[in-house]
Image (cartoon, rainbow, N blue to C red):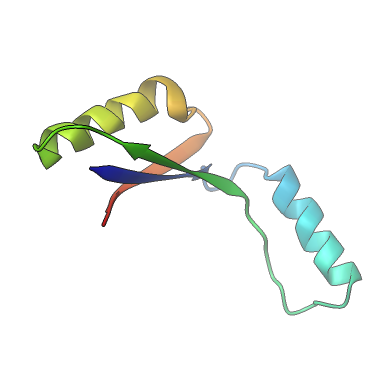
Length: 80
């Protein structure tokens, strides 16, 4: 099974990359851009046939290592 994990900063926290990109886009004339936010995507391939157990294991991985629960939220999806 293949999982996609989208990780992003929690709402209300500063996003320095996003703010810098937003400003740069405005400087280039793209004034219709109202915000830019950065995150990351991780793809994991897991052996097994029990989708629920694999998804629970991926969630544990996110909480223990892949995402910083203090400043980040994550969303897990099955690919394919």
